[in-house]
Image 1 (tube, rainbow, N blue to C red):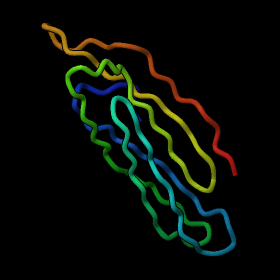
Image 2: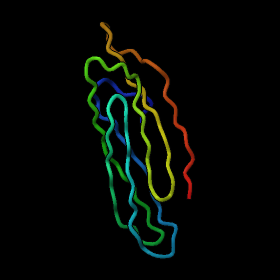
Image 3: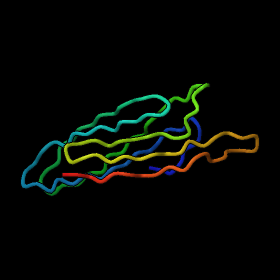
Length: 111
């Protein structure tokens, strides 16, 4: 994920998944996001034993007038655990774009 995005710009999300088990299976997960509104994007794909895959998608959000959010919060949730991230929203200024608050990535995968 990027550290910051411009107003109304979709957020590119990319995650790498490896099946470390002895057999094939289906990886199921969700990308939950909030700020200023809540949304969820679920996904699933098959992986053979030892296979890896990169899942990529762009998360769109809507920032209505009156919302004062300066960041988006994301959680990637699966049976393997959860990781949380924040992405700064940049504010428009007369001379271009100015960054608002600092975002951080937190969390430890479990499982």
